[in-house]
Length: 179
Image 1 (cartoon, rainbow, N blue to C red):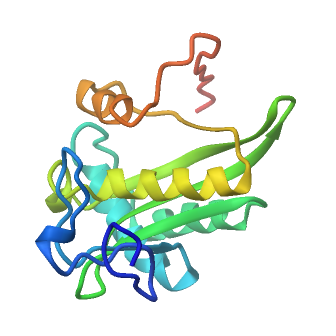
Image 2 (tube, one colour):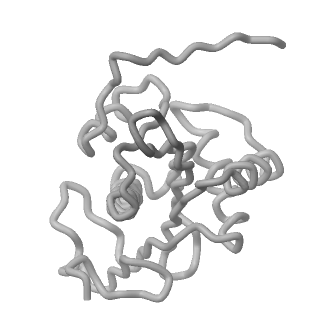
C-alpha cells in the first residue's frame, strides 16, 4: 500500500475504493492505474492521441498511422520515458511520453505528449496523476526539471500552473514554415 491506493502490478495507482482517492482538487475515476509506457500500449495511446488532438483547443487531424509513427519515434529516442493511465477494463484513457535531455545545467525532461481521452478530461484527475508519477520518477532519477510546449489556452495553462509549471521568460518558441 502506498497511501494512494492499492499496489497494482500495472502501476502505482489502483483506485478500487472511492475513499482511497488522493486528496486533490480533482478526483480520480475508480479503477485507474498508472504504469510505465510499454510497446503493448502503443495502439491504445495512438487512439487517445487521435481523439484528444481532434478536440479543442488543438483541432488537429492525426490518423492512427501518423500517431503511431510519432509515438514510436519518441520511444526510440535515447532517454525516452512515459506512463499510461489504464481503466479497470484495460482501456488506455491517457498517457504521457517524453525524453530526458542533457543540458549544461544538468538533466531535464521534455514532455512531448500528454493526452487524456476527451470523455475523461477535466474531471477524473488522469492528467494530474500522470504528471505526479512523472515528477516522482524524475526526482528519483535526479532530473532537475521538466518542461513542455502547449497550445495557448487558458484552461491548459491553468492546469499546468496548478501543478507547478511556469512560463519560462528566457525561451521563445519560434517556427519557420517551409511548405
